[in-house]
Image 1 (tube, rainbow, N blue to C red):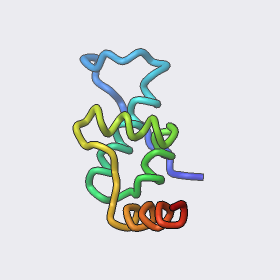
Image 2 (image 1 turned 180 degrees about the vertical axis):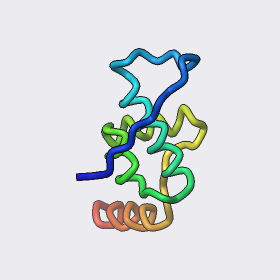
Image 3 (image 1 turned 135 degrees about the vertical axis):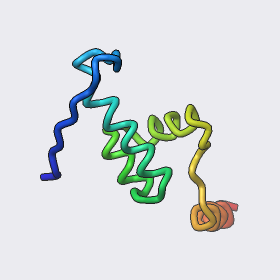
Length: 83
């Protein structure tokens, strides 16, 4: 079980009560991923979304799809095996 925190939002934050937890988790996940504190997988789990939904959230933030050199090498290896 993880840590639980309580945050009091000022009344100027106009988020429906039923959406607060989800939105806070998504924002936290995006920021922690952006700062390199969480991996892609950890961040998407914190946000409670699928891999593809998290990619869409990153795209909306102007971050694009995460794709590193290791993934490129893996994809190239698969392509070689298929040809």
